[in-house]
Length: 423
Image (tube, rainbow, N blue to C red; front, side, top):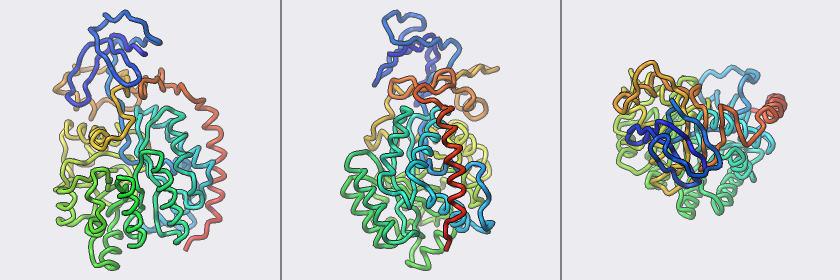
C-alpha cells in the first residue's frame, strides 16, 4: 500500500476537494483526515501542497507512429490528406518489424505515464508484421504498468492476404484479451471485409474502432462507390449499435449522419491536434450526443494538451466552457466503465505539483485545468495501486536504455521506408 500524505484530493467526477491522507491499495482508495493515518504502508509520499486526482485515459492513440518524430521527408511532398497517408503513414507502417512495434509501444507507454495517463486505447497497424503484433504491444504497455484496449487496423489497402491476417490477428487476440475490432476507414474497406469484421464484433461481443470522415475523401469515396455516406454504410453493418464502438474524428458529416451517431450508443473520439496538423478541418459536436471523448491520434501522449486544444480551437468551431472541456477529457472513464473494461479503477492516480498563484476551488478547478495545469506538473503516477512514476522519473524501466535502442531502430525504420514501393 502507498500513503499519499497531507494531499488535496480531487474527486474527478464532482471536482470536490478534500484535504486528506490517501491510502492506495491495488483496487481501492481510502481517505482519512489529513495527517491522521498512522497504519503500516509500503511507502509514504509527502503530498503537502499537491493535488491528487484520477489519472488520465488516451481515448485514441497510434503507438506505431512513435518512431516517426524527426524522420526524413517523404519521397513526394503530399498535396492532400490521401497522399499524407500514402507517402508517410502507409509507408511507415509497412516498414515496421516486430522489434519496432515493441519499442514503439515502450516509447509511447513511457510518454503516457509521464503525462499522467495510465490507460491507453490504441489503434495499431503493421501490415508486414501483423501476426502477434497486438500481444507485443500489450506486453510493452504492461511493462510500464499501463492498462490498455487494443485493436489491429484491418484494411484492404495492402491486399486480400494482409486483410485476412488482420482479421485473424484480431480474432486470436480477442480470445484472450479485452480489445476492439480495428478498422482503418471506409475508403480502404470492402463490403466483404466489413462483413467479416461485423462477425468478429458479434463473436467477441465487442465494438469497432474506426476512422470516420477524417477527410472529405472518405465521404466522396463512399458516396461514389456505395451510393451512401460513410456513417450510413457503417450503420448498415450494425457498427453503431454497440456502446463499445469508437468512431474517430467525425469531421465531415451530414446532418443525417450526426443524428444517426447522436441517437446511437456508440462513442466519438475527438483529435484536435492531429486535425490541425493534417489540415483536414475542425471538429463540431453538433447533434453527436454526449458520448465524446478525447484522443491524441499519435501526435503525442499528453491528454491535458488534448483538452486544451479542444477548448481553445473549439472557440470558433465547437465552443466549450472550461468545465465542458474537462468533462470531455474525463468521458473516456465513462466509456471504460460503461462497457466493463478493466484497468481504470480508483487506484489509478496522478499527483500534481501545481503551485497556483490563485485559489483552487471546486468552482474554478476546471479553469485551472484549461489555463494552468499541464504535463510539467505531473510529479507522481500510480497505476492500479503501483507507483510507476516517482518525482517525474519512471520506476519500472530504464528510460535511457529504451531511448538509446529506439534511436537505432528509428534510423533503421527510416532507411527501410526509402525502399517501400508506393502505388
